[in-house]
Each structure stands twice: as C-alpha cells, then as structure tokens.
Amino acid sequence: MKLQRFEDARQFYDRVKDYLLSQEAMHNLLLGIADTLIRYPELYQSQPYLATVEIDRDIIAVAMRTPPYDLVLSQSKNVDAVKAIAKDLHLSSEQISAVNAPTIESETFAQAWCSLTNQSYQLKMAMRAFQLEQVQNISQATGYLRLATESDQEMLRHWFEAFCIEVIGKVESDPKAWINHHLQQQAIYLWQDKVTVSMASRGQFTPHGVRINLVYTPPEYRGKGYASACLAGLSQKLLDQGHKYCFLFTDLANSTTNHIYQLIGYRPIGDWHNYHFI
Figure 1 (cartoon, rainbow, N blue to C red):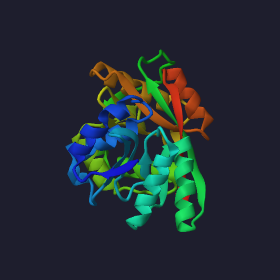
Figure 2 (cartoon, rainbow, N blue to C red):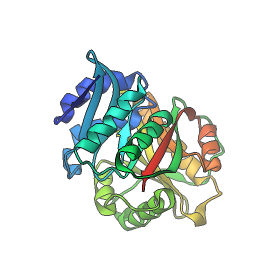
Figure 3 (cartoon, rainbow, N blue to C red):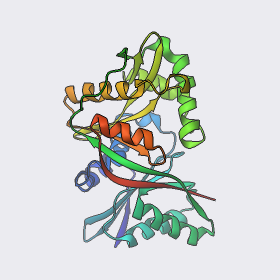
Figure 4 (cartoon, one colour):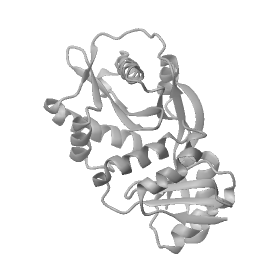
C-alpha cells in the first residue's frame, strides 16, 4: 500500500478520474473540486492536499483538501487506506478540523485521526447524496426562474450568510468573493414572484453532471413552494443544457427538504457524514 501526493491538479485529476467516475454521484464533490482547481486555481489561497492510496498502481482511496475547507475522502476499497491518509496528514503536521466523506470512510478517519491527536470527534451533519436524471412535474408556485444579476448582490450576500449560519453554523467563505465569482459565471438563479423569494446555485461540474447547491428561501417566504419551483426550474435548465445528471446533498435532519427533493425527481445514492474534531 502506497500513498502518493500530487502537486499538480491536472495530473491528479487525470490519475483519479476513472476511479471517481465508477461512482460519479457519490464522488460528485471530489470530481467538482478537482475540476474547479483546474479551471479556477486563483480561487484557492493555499496549496491543496491531493493524494491517492494505491496497491500495485490500483487506486483504493482518494483524499482532497483545499484549505480552509474540510478534508474530503472518496469511497475506499480498504479502510486501511483511510488510516494511511490520517497518518500521512498527521506526520506532515496538517491541521484538520473536520472530515467530509461517505459514512464508513468518515468514521474510520475520525477514529484514526483522534487516536493520533488525542482529540475527540462529533457528528456535525449526516447527509445524503442525490442524483436526478429527469424532473418530475410538481405543483407550480407562482412566479418564474431568473438569472441573478449585479443588482441582486446585496440581497445575495445576506442570503448567503443566512444560509451558511443556518446550515453549518458559520460563514466559511468570503461572501463577496463567492457571490462575485458565481455572478460572473452566471451560476446563481432566483425565483421571482412579486418580490425575489428563493435562490439556488449551479455548483461544480463532473464529466456527466453538475451539482446544485445553496438552495435557500428566507423564513418569511417558506411553505409556499418557492424552493421546490426554483430547484426544479434550475434542474431542468441544466438538463436542457446537456448535463446528464444533477446532484445535490441534503441534511438528513431536514425531513421536509429530503421529501421535496424526491418529489422533484432526485433519487438517494448514499450517505455521507461530516465529523468535526474537538
């Protein structure tokens, strides 16, 4: 068993692409991060951690971290590979505050990391990966989908911060930088009724699909079908653009959104856990 680090994102992506594509929906986050590292390296301030664990040149696990974000792990063919990643990070004095990975891999890493560091860990969020191939007909809320523009910037900043605090308890990214980049990429969509009531963003690309994130409706507009309409509208637009799949992650604690997304046509693929270290 050998752990291999990569300095070059393109070389890394070429090496791991086939392995990750064997489970594209489960690995959509890793594929998307790798794609973004190649397309927009200026978005990342620090050198990323990019690694594979291999046996006789066969990949059995993939690890990525783009500081300040969490460590992300692929599914693994051998949990000892996950332990090797923990050991490598510890030996290089990496500061890891959280791990985000499929359930077995995330728990294996958390246990290995805490045995090395004498830290403890706690489950921050249990998530489920979903995949959509066809949008189902749903009751249409009043209004229409529109592309966000520069004039929406101040509202988007408030909504972005509110989403982060509600979902993960803190704002990890620079809101202004995030919004500016996504506006430039024409990636943020809004549901417009008499006023703007909901948003969703086109996220990172995989070879055959695209992830949707930042689905958010302010509390005063909830319960009227706006989020469902916004997500369904954006999902259909992305499929019409030629993407075979749309992906997203949900918080399993939110039974409402998990139910709504399945009504739209999203199908569960597998579960992920996010553990934080104390």
